[in-house]
Amino acid sequence: MITHVPEDGRRQEVQVRIVDISGGGLAVLVPPKELRFEPGTEYSQCLLRLPDGNPLPVRLKVRNLFEIEKANGVKVLRAGCEFIGLSNQATARIQRYMFKLERERRMHDEH
Image (cartoon, rainbow, N blue to C red; front, side, top):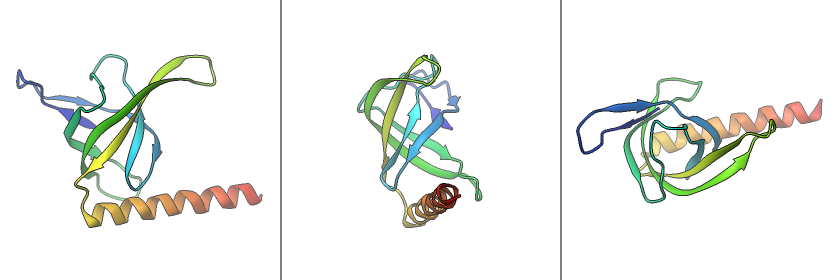
């Protein structure tokens, strides 16, 4: 979830779908209208929800934005975002989650 507080002071919370994650950042599908994603934009109040515990507070900076086509032919925007100032604890938790995903993928591929 990304919380954005624009200049008018109205707090806005938007849930985004994560399509890729790494130790340095993540990629999300851009919601159609809720938030304006542009390279260089920073979101300082984000919550990253991993399945293994409480949400992690993170700061994100949009690095790139491009259009992709989903399997059903629908075109959507994908934003690549960098983690800013991630704590060591948050980094370790994200890495554990990535290792778990990789183990599950390998087990699936073997069967």
